[in-house]
Image (cartoon, rainbow, N blue to C red; front, side, top):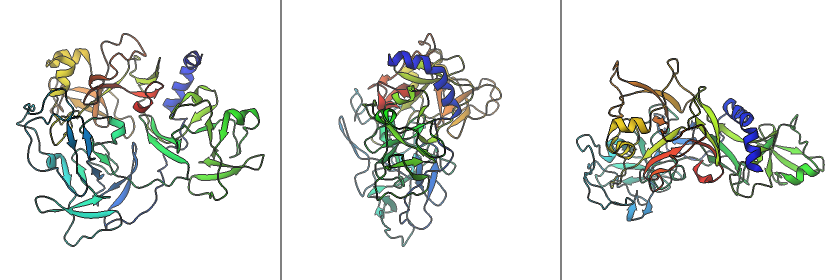
Length: 448
């Protein structure tokens, strides 16, 4: 019955999603808790990850998480940096089904770790401030660290607020190429949290359950009482709770205190038995709360699948992202047009670029398309190599890209809502592979 109800409401839900009506003034910046920082460092607002720490030029700062992999450990130990200027030529075998020691592709253009991840060097005389400290690299240079983790900037980031170089580990699964932006603590009342999804920055309870608002509430007051309040639990504010920023406290008819965000009272749907469930949005008039929402290109559509909603092109074909991290000791990315395309072409075309284009064609941008929000752009791509096209090249394709990386459809999806290439790749696409652009995934909630 729930699936049938979702199908009946898909047109309404899809239209609301594309118009951004589920977000509450989503263009506002998220509030964060100030903390001591070295001179020149600052906080920038990013569209995908919220507030992030940045250097004096506004470039996002990242750490390389230390992780135990299937066959060894990777990343920076606490207080150390293992990202060096030495170019690796062989695989490490940390998680691949193949052994270490295999020759890496395109060695003539393969960069060293520090060519991609520039260490954030500390000037002479720099001293520790709060969680910020200075470590000494193996080459003798001094590098900033945050909470013991060495800090870097990404060659892929250009403008303040860019977080194109890396993302949080939970967004990319077990990919070995993960670098994580560092961020200040959010200024949230106790009992709340925020989770990054492909649809936006989703407000949750501290235990991870979705937070909702009701269209029936007017003037900042709750109209949900009696039987309604038995199904939709008002999120209670403690006696010690105080209004701040976007957060207010409203008095309910029974005298209880309820949290409100940006003027709207907040609830939890008691029928949501799993974290990040969005089943409450199937009820007309109820919406999940996003503190920031990601707008998508206007020519795209939203399609219903048996597992939830996916972003699709104008013809309704599911859109896929491709992620890739090589298995070398320095764990470099291989999914950006500036990086090697050998893994992608091997996976989708058996080494043939032509076959790859047939199986996973790029999502082409219309002639008048320019961008679709801060995370969507139009790139000129050489279809034979997968790299950026030369200026003025007649064979160049104008393709849509998310976070600077092209997106694709799959020839094996015969109709709207088909997702036959979901998790296609090594280890369910964790190391290299394709994933559907889930706006809502009722099966694998960690994926959205």
